[in-house]
Image 1 (spheres, helix red, strand yellow):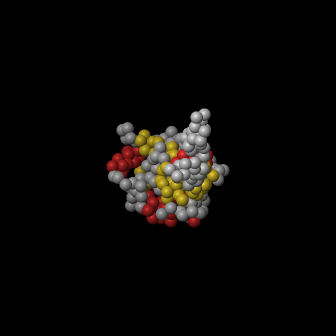
Image 2: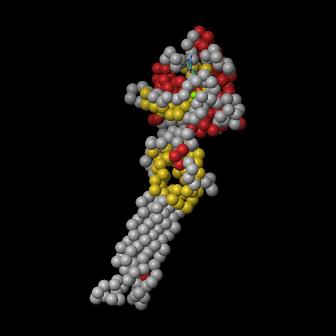
Image 3: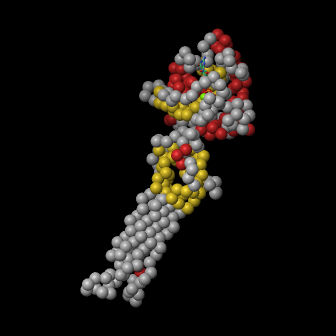
Length: 336
Ligand SMILES: Nc1nc2c(ncn2[C@@H]2O[C@H](COP(=O)(O)OP(=O)(O)OP(=O)(O)O)[C@@H](O)[C@H]2O)c(=O)[nH]1
Ligand SMILES: [Mg+2]
């Protein structure tokens, strides 16, 4: 199941307590204090990885706690420091402080881990408390508590290209033609219920990641259909492909489809609405669909790339257009 929002409490491990002990040996009956220090508590770490695609594996837990440090021992033996506890999350997970609402960390790159709750330090044993006048200290420190905080994780997929369109526009079919992803495809609306990524072969050695999301309908930003909650998964793309169905079974004219999607994007976020877009006419494989694509081009005043995922026509042109765009965009810093 695709889970992209989750909230729970995190706690660093408690430090082990310091030990109270005195040297007891045959010829040193009243030896000095020798209690060792407690070990430090483990840190609670969030680790972005490419091994998982959703936050589903973290559901059902309200608390993640790192292990506690070991207590100190006699003969100045320190307790062991606890291991850290790492929670794996998909790349693109943003960690928020659930109470204040501020971003703690955007984990956009795999393996760049983040300590979200530090473990407490171990307490000092009584050997640290001896002075010239206080030679038999019976005091030691308890370990410090680990940090505790409530966090919210929100996954925003990271892709180069996002597919947009009304239901049935042919988004998933295109994903399946350009990548090895195998999304569900069918002739009814809302076949796609959760986002899916695929890696496409671009020009030369280049590749690009495509995100397919559920279809949008008029009023999606007001919660109609599946709503616009999946649009956050194309927020971190460089380029949007707006797929417009030019087949004869389409319920809207291409120009209507274009207008609906543009309005939904604006309703969701002005910033996303300004993202570079290519208009892609889909199912262009006969005279009728070719005429509809031409009409769209004329009415919108935007150039339209014609494709048919069924025959493969136009797919190469699309790959060239996307690759050329990305070549320039990738050379420009500060995407996110
Ligand atoms: N003739 C023709 N049919 C196509 C083409 N591309 C997709 N289809 C058909 O259009 C229907 C919808 O395709 P999908 O890829 O599931 O559409 P979608 O945009 O992912 O739809 P949702 O997931 O519901 O938003 C399916 O019956 C496909 O077989 C095409 O190039 N030509
Ligand atoms: Mg689909």
